Length: 430
Ligand code: KE4
Image (cartoon, rainbow, N blue to C red; front, side, top):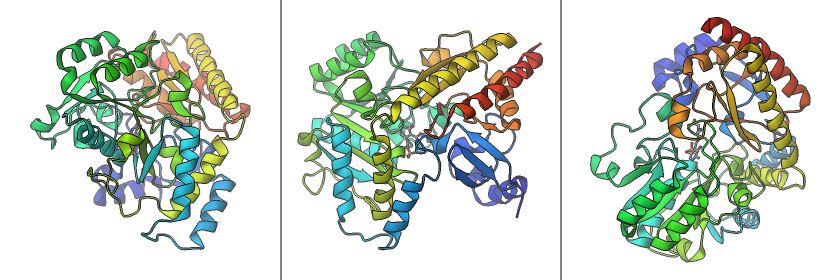
């Protein structure tokens, strides 16, 4: 069996940066990525047999823990009937009904194969339904890799300092306006100036791609009011937060009803799935019901639906989210105590199941504050934790994820590694 290094050398010959998604490449933290051989519960094992306590969870989908027996059994049953039909199948209907039950703002939806497809389709729908062109997003917001979103984007684009990607025509980029996240006044000014030309506002209701930054009180409410007042579509991008921060996602947590919602990650249970949906009068404009075109060969794939349905059954069970919230809070409090004991400037943000680590005095409530954090200290901490078998997101601008498989033992193991790692950070800074 090849070593991590040998695999990365071969991968780098055939895949740009040796990866199929940039943020996996460890470019911003230095070193080379490990190659996972298998995963179970809260853990990954690499090809060299080393075990890692995993706080990335495949970037969100693994909320019930890796390789959950219920999800695996559902996939094994589905595979027995074939892998893809290209015709409607019952599982797509069951999935649609499961999602609309959990997120009542979604009266009708369409399954797609990634979060990117979901957000691209939602923006096309908003533009087609309003006959307007301008899309408003937020600095550091990440909505996948559709051209209109790669303007001051977060996640990998922010990690590598190319928030606005080459290859996006200026004429298109000019139709994407960006605002500071959590700045309701800036949104009011923009709508006052150009509200009648804005097709939609797309927002991560909890920012998870400029690290983790929850909304200020009143911020989401202001966006809701402005969109309603000006006839713009409010799109909640819940690809990351959907079914994680609450059974009904951030829209349930904060009590805001968007016009459209985009989903991904958890609803695939680890398989490639996305979805977009919302008001019936909007979704009825999507082909073949209406003129706005969107399609996908593997959309609603029966095996992927089986995985997603099993995952939704797990996350919608009563009491699923309470331990997630408790353990996320326990982890963040313990990390802040460990950093303080080592004399390291450090703060956290957290919501149920999701957290952000910032090497800064804090608080961190904006893109500007997030990007002002000490990335070198994060890099040192990341590697010290990795050496102690704890795998954090390999970027200072990504959120961390906790699963139902992260018990108190896992949290205590993490805090023990952190106490040692913060001392290493302090020593390196001295
Ligand atoms: P995908 O196309 O990667 O399935 O989803 C794009 C997307 C859309 N919206 C939000 C809020 C998202 O967080 C994402 C994807 N998230 C990143 C993690 N920050 C995916 C990890 C990666 O790019 O490899």
